[in-house]
Amino acid sequence: MTEQAEGVGAPPRPRRAALSVFPALCVVAGIVGWALGWHLGVDNAVYRSGAVALLHGEPLYDAMSLSAEPSWARLPFTYPPTAALLFIPLALVPTQVAWGILGAITVASLTAVVRLSIAALPDRPRWMDPDRTTVVLGIALLGLEPVWRTLFLGQINMILMLLVVVDVLVLGARGNRFGGVLVGVAAAVKLTPLIFVAHLLVIGRRWDALRAVVTFLLLQAVMFLWVRHDVVEFWGTAVQDPQRIGPIYWAGNQSLNGLVLRLTDNADWSMRVVVPIAVVLAVPCALWVRGLRPLPALLVTAFLGLLVSPVSWSHHWVWVVPLLVFLLSRIDDPRDRRAWWPVAAVVLVFASCVLLAMRNGLAVEFEWTPPEYVIGSAYLLVPLVVGAIALVRRVRAARG
Image (tube, rainbow, N blue to C red; front, top):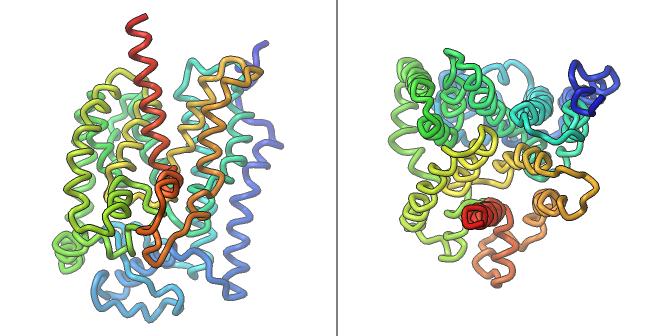
């Protein structure tokens, strides 16, 4: 019996227990943190503050007092008004407990993304047992900086990624009539998932793309009827001010825009440089997506989005999780050490915390040396290097 055949069925109880430990620890930590007054989940506090303001009838983007929030959690809300609506459950519990619950969902989402990514690879090698691989990666990948930072900040990147993965890889594969809805919901929380509407169009799922847009617009309409001032304020002012979320020239912004800002001492015309580059990259990526299988096609779009977004903080790069699943699936013989180099290189970049070791903050990025610029752009270089290698291989295969 092959290893792949042995992996069919529900994971053994010890494996399920192993996967449940970390979500449980998150909830316990949240409760203990609340009892002891710990400052847990700065970004989670932002999400919760929007929900609290919405429930208290306070404006989301100007003159928000947040009197119900602890002093350390009174941070400006930077997301669409629809996000505040979806964050309301977080307002029902203390800030630290909300962080624990969100952390548990994040860890569970990591495991789900790994499992669904494996399931999307029918040609995976025989040694890649789905159950065992899910357990191992579900625990090991917590050590990646985008993952643990998402967890400790109380971010929702992993949850949004799961929504997109389920929509594109599961609902799309089944031709489900709700295809596109989850992409629309994800985009209503953070605008960057809108790139997956284009992905749905490119792969021929036009009705799913339409449902994604309709879902997104319906949620905007609901909020317009509820808090018209906030909707007008967000779309008229807040969305045009990326600096609202902090200095985006920081090393943590691993987008092309962040790189250009660091190279030009925070020039206000940086996006005028990035947009043409984005167009140049989008054309071959769209052609590439049409010829790839679902998971690698999704990865191409995801990493393109990270590159061309005005802001892609290091914790946004959780898409490295399905990327590693895909790279592992390309290893036919696990005893072949050379086959592990792509996996090792990606893990080295995202687990080494190299960005934390860089000189950063207080505009010191403008004083970087050329080697520092290379190392300080490690995340955004990964998709560019991987894409270049894949392109070279395709050209060689076509000639050979």
